[in-house]
Image 1 (cartoon, rainbow, N blue to C red):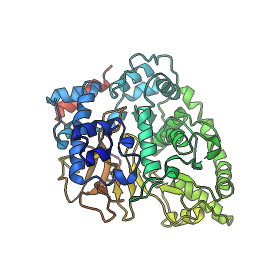
Image 2: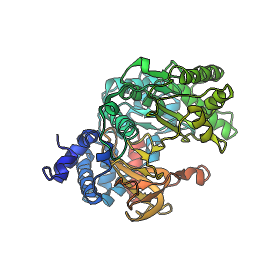
Image 3: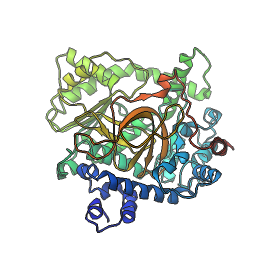
Image 4: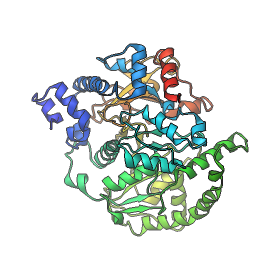
Length: 481
């Protein structure tokens, strides 16, 4: 297979290399973090432009909503990166279904809606017999090439992203095993690529929300499918319907409303939520003990949300306990959760309990395979299959691809197979196109990333990047039944 070395030594053309990058970005870069981040900027631009053009050719007739959006605007080809902006989907597209479909359990129509967002044919799936969200997602995963994930539904509305199973490989291997375990400037070792890591997991070992489903693939690609290397806090799969119920309850409480639009059969499961809350302290205590005792001296991959890890750390430190992982472990504690207030010293407390000097920050989200890891200068470097497009926060006009710019983040994911790669996010970022002192060649983001919805009091109105008529037609097509 063509690799980046072939492009660099002139034995492969840009077009051949772009095709190989799309087919398997990890193999194209020899599973090497250093090679991923060492492509000269001008050459990377040519490679990404060619790959983007190919992606559009591959997907423009296979993804119905993309076909509608492109046809309405008369876009038949993409020759430059900026030309993809009118075809980028807003992040809200993945929760655009009529809410009554989920509230009334019309999963046949939910499948029709999802089928319009993916190149995979879901038309032969008969979901009319599904009674729950979880059983519907189970069916899609079992009978098709997608492994769809839902959001946590923090706002009361779940999004659904029809990921391809190969997309998980790109994200977990490319984001964690390659970028977090390897050191830039050094060749990848066989240990980094193939060693079974011990994975303490601070929640359920599987499910269909992004965090829970990630656990399944983290066990597969980092613990190498070894149960004795995987340590989840809970021993049951997270039920998507119970998560949906919890989100609807929180949303109703936030607006001071006693009405909760869910089936009575789901409302009757409130006791399961209450039982989980009662069990949580004991589960957390047992999990904390496994960190301290079972994993002493072991090479660990630990990823956890800060609020949970803070509770575990304070409990451990109060008992005089700290961890003793192997020094080449990878620790990531993030503040990605919404609605949690943490003390100013939260990170110092957690790191003291984990006995760790470095918290490996990264940026990513469920709609793409993007994992962007922070370098020693605190900059999040984008993987070379992720093309950034930074938009003016007010007008959604493209900002120049040079210098330092602040605005709304949009990305095109060249690697993703389950959905269209163009996405306009709800994130406000600062990007720098200039060289980073660390030596990595891709554009990089600051670690000050915020949500526009938070800045704007809960709403996030995106100015149309497509023509208003094309956007409205695509949305009407997506949500008509």
